[in-house]
Length: 274
Ligand code: KMH
Ligand code: ZN
Image 1 (tube, rainbow, N blue to C red):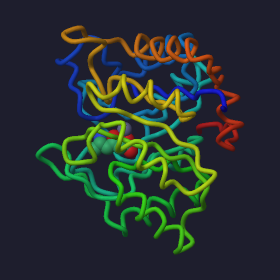
Image 2: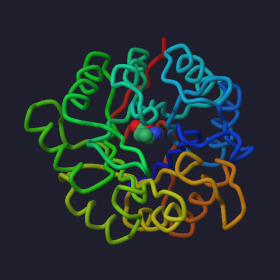
Image 3: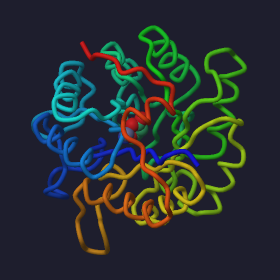
């Protein structure tokens, strides 16, 4: 098996600072979190922008400051969100790509998102992919449901996407595929050959799905974007969630990738964010 790539998604767009004291929503906090998660064994960081008051933003200058904080405090692979928050315009969501992060997410279809709808029709996906191509950013496909994989194949047939690529299987969003081992195995089985994949389990699904992915040879994403708790009633710090999956990997005798090993596995080149 390849070494395990642990991605930390420390902030997201939905969690409010009032929900936990451990949410890193300023550049300074994000830099400190990056350092702590790197020390705990993370190789990649999935970044969402936040205003000083904690509201989500895709503002370029915020992403520039957040990227600088990550780069000052760590050598983590830098991945930006183009999902942003529900309700943002497609243009708003993809503006950060001009900073040329090493990677950025591409959600491969519309999905119910709690009581909201996270809208990703084909024109939005095509627009984001065009900007990724323009700025040389490698996509990570976010698959919230099985049909999203079919959408990705459709984009490939249109020449907009090249497989194999790296796929993050997000399970347990209320409105998407449930966070079950059966769903994970089913989706992994249907991935185009040669694809690498990770799982991001939401809430209580994070731990069992991460453990399953480690045993299956996949990669894992953990962090407060997806799960606030270390255990029932116990709020987590991002680095604790990283450290736990690294300990599980050690027990399963799966080596953990450094950021440079992750770059090698994912075919990335470390870029300078301008
Ligand atoms: N905040 C969610 C609506 C991504 O980062 O690309 C979408 C999301 C996906 O978090
Ligand atoms: Zn995200």
